[in-house]
Image (cartoon, rainbow, N blue to C red):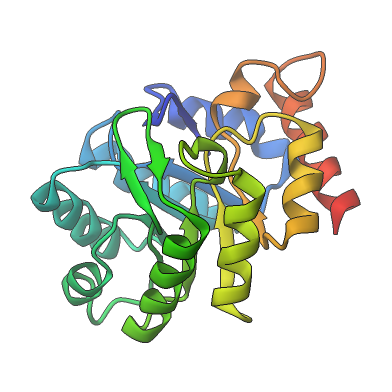
Length: 218
């Protein structure tokens, strides 16, 4: 994710050029931090590079969430993450090809924290599937009421074969391994890469280390 502290970084377009040698297959951004025109250009360039594009909604106001969802559909985002009202988002993006992965639990604040028990997470995941979502975007390591891995396990069981993405504070190789073992299909890395959490070295080396840990954990 070209994001830091739950915002798309202003230099996102330049960073896309910097990380191009890695030929990443999945690159994302948040709905806030830069203007809509920049997000449009960023999304187009991600897709032109052959990667899947992701946008995560971190806005809390319902109107802002729906505005972001419509923007994602309009600019051609491949996978939309976040938000807590799947029925409204699916209605707002009807006719588009994007896949949608809402937040289970009770996300709040900025940077986002996550309230909710494993039982609530499972309940929400089942609701998402019934609504027609492709899976869930779980803020496991932002949890305030439960063990993060217990939330991952609950979501995994409730989702069955649907996709489970874990976002937020995945800031070590150990956490990547733990998430894979608990059943996550994918994870997002943003601030941790900018802050040097995965290895010594620059951003390219951080991303290489994170990708290597993901490959090893498969």
